[in-house]
Image (tube, rainbow, N blue to C red):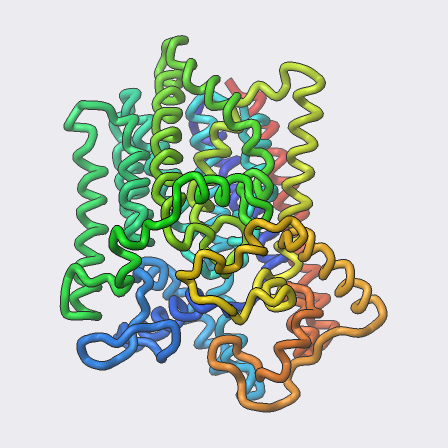
Length: 512
C-alpha cells in the first residue's frame, strides 16, 4: 500500500530523523576525503574546481585537484554557501570562522540519511509491509547500523546508499508493471553513479528486477548515461583526459589483490570491520530474504515487486562483496566499520524487514536483542569520533603503507583492539572527566592545522572530548546559556516531531 497517508508518515520520519541526527551531529569536517570534498564545494562557489593541496593530485594546469567525484560537492553547495555567509557576518574571532563555516555542510549527510529513511519506509510499504513493521525496520536502519555514524560525516556513502535504494525500489516496482517507477530507478542510478563511479556495477545489479523487457531499461540507462557524461566532463576539466579519474592504480585490476576469502571474512566477520557485528540486525536478513523471494508465488503486483527486489538485493550484495572483498583496501580505513558496505545497508535492512521475527516469542526476543546490540555499537561511534579512537589506539598516523598486507591488521583482526570496545572505553573515561569539570579547551592560539581547523597542540586534548557540536562549542568558549537554548530547542522540536509521526502512523494504520 502506498498513498498520501504513507507519504505523510514518510515526511514525518524524515523530519524526526533529521532532528535527531542534527542534535547528535559533530558539526565538524576533518577527514581527508571529507575536507577535500568540502574544499571542492568551496571552490565551486568561486567558479573553480581546483582545491588547496593536501589529499590531492596535480592536474594538467599544475593546480591541485581532488580525486573525489563532484556530485556531493554540487548538492552541498547551498549548505556550504550558508556556512561561508555565516562565518563572514557573525562576530567571531578570525581563527574560529573556518570552523563555523563547516557546520552547515556537516549537516549534509543528516539530510541525506533522513531522506533515505523516508524512502526506505515508502518502499517497504510499497512492497506490502504494514506501517508498524516498516517503521520498525526504518528505525533499525537509521539507529542500529553505521548509517547513524556516517550521517555525522561528510563522506559519500549515505548518498550512494540513497541512490542504490531508489534504483532498487524503482526497478522492483517497474518490473512489477508500475510504469512511472522507472523514473525513480533512473534518479537512483544517477545519484549513485554520480556520487562514485565504482557504484556503477552495484547500480546495474539493482536494476535486475527490470527483467528482459528493453523498454523498462530506457529511463534507468538514461540516468546512467547522464552520470557517466558528468564524470567524463569532470575528468576532462581536471586532468585533460576524459578517462583519467585520478585514482591511478586503484582504478585498475591491479588494485584487486586481496584473496576473496580474506576480504569476505574481513568485511563480514572480522572483529574490527565485520559488518555482522557493526549491524547485528543483518543476522535476520537470510530469513527475510527467503520470505521476499517466495512472495512472488502469492500473486499480485506487491508480491511480484517484493520478489523482484529480492533478486536485486541478492545481485547487489553479490557484486558488492566480490568487488570490495578482493579490493586491496577492502577495509576502507579511516572510517567506522566496513565503509564500502555502508551503501548496501538499506538493501540488507529491506530483507530484514521481511523476516518473520514476530512468529514466536523466541524470535521476538532475538530481534530485540539484535536491535539493542546494534544501538550499543552505534552509540560508541556516535559519541566518540572514530578518528580520535584511531589516534588513541595508535592506528593514526599510519605506520605502514596502504599496500602492506599487515596495514592495520591488528585493528582489523585482533579482538583486543576492537574499535567498538575502544570507543566505549573512551566514552566512559571522557564522560567521567566531563562530570568532574575536566574537558578540552579550544581557542588557545597558534596556527590552525589546515585539515583539522585547530592548532596541532590542541589535537591531543580532543581525544578526551565528546563528538557533538554542542560539546565542541563549549570547548571553544561559547556561552553555556546559548548552547543550552539551542539544545533545548532541538529537543523540543524532536519531541513535537515524534508526536506528529506517531499520529501519522496511527492514521495510516487505521486507513483503508
